[in-house]
Length: 257
Image 1 (cartoon, helix red, strand yellow):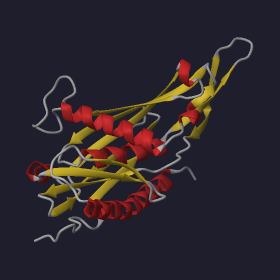
Image 2 (image 1 turned 90 degrees about the vertical axis):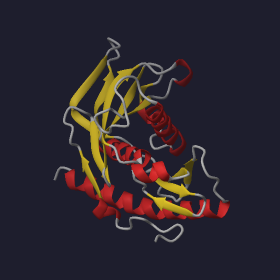
Image 3 (image 1 turned 30 degrees about the vertical axis):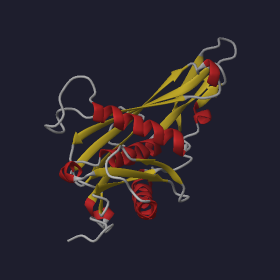
């Protein structure tokens, strides 16, 4: 029997899989497999005029899809409640962690900026969609290569140089770690769909490489004491180091020699 707060799966790199740059039509992509949950993230960059109240900032638009293809628990049609909640969670992680400074996406203040559409699609669902989505988003953004863009002073039109591409500046590396709560006595990390259904609550902790707490997501369920929440944060920090190491290894392996 598992002891309270024991890691259910201890060897992260053997239980999980990451592939980067697998979608050639996207500006950046990553496929992540956590246990039996598989998600793919594709990032598409487009040019647009910045908002009037944020003339020096670009946009990041995340979207999480849970199609009927990935599990019988989902139906085709408009996004369900779980997909909408996951999309909002990813948007909050982007904002709270400052993974990318939106000012870095601005090309010409008040005139032109990048819009990053981050589409995260679940291919096989077996729980823990938030961890997988955050992992895939980070890996995909680190894989993005944006072409050089300038504005012609004479014509006022943008000129794109596809031969000169640069990676995004990733400011922070947020990693999410989810726990299934069982009556405030037992927590299991990286829960499966069955474990989530049996649990009396869940909590997701997001940390960055500076051991900074970016956010805590707890959608109702059993309460959690401060001491146990702190234990979750400590374990999330430990897991972050494992995830970051795996991402760096994969990104380094696909860099041109």
